Image 1 (tube, helix red, strand yellow):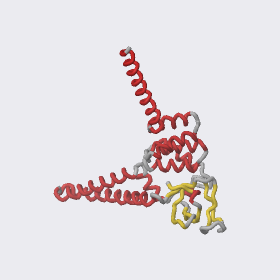
Image 2 (cartoon, rainbow, N blue to C red):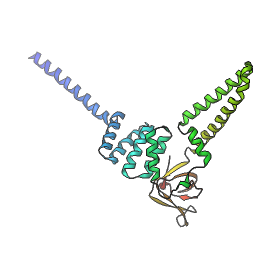
Image 3 (tube, rainbow, N blue to C red):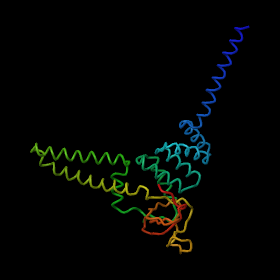
Image 4 (cartoon, helix red, strand yellow):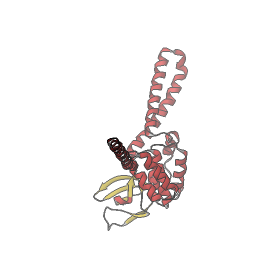
Length: 258
């Protein structure tokens, strides 16, 4: 009888331990990033875009921001018909993984759906050149490239002092590297100065006021998905500027900073 009681006690303890581990695993599972990502992907495949967005947002709350995460969020919002938030997340993804081909294709498609825009709204020619030269690099990648250009220029400059045979061609190489360094620095400055200043319109349509109060006359219409620059803020109003240099005031709920 004692032996049987001992076996029953051991089995009971073992069962409690197993149930405890299972319970702990079930509690931990909803907070596990891999599980959340799997659930989000499953919801997306099932066309449950609202649920997928909720799951992906949980990862952002855990400070697990990444380019693919924003890309997936952008796809969800695009499928859901929220163009502004789709472009917002594509823009955030482009800052992390700018050279991703799928991201670029989806971004171009999404921006083609914006109302009230035309080919004339393109960036100035010098910004387009800088984008072609350095657009495929992230902010960290551009900083590393500029550091390498600077170091290589110094090496050539030092080498031409000790090796006379290099003097004939070294100045041409140095001039090219300096030109690349200056243009890259301009691109870097533009990106850094844009942090916290660029935003996307997330409402379908919004009147942009000439002055920061409700009764002020409307200046122009801001359409969903448009990219604007934040200039100033005053009370419950934000002063913005568009790509075609129009300036006006909107409510904070109209836009979201990239």
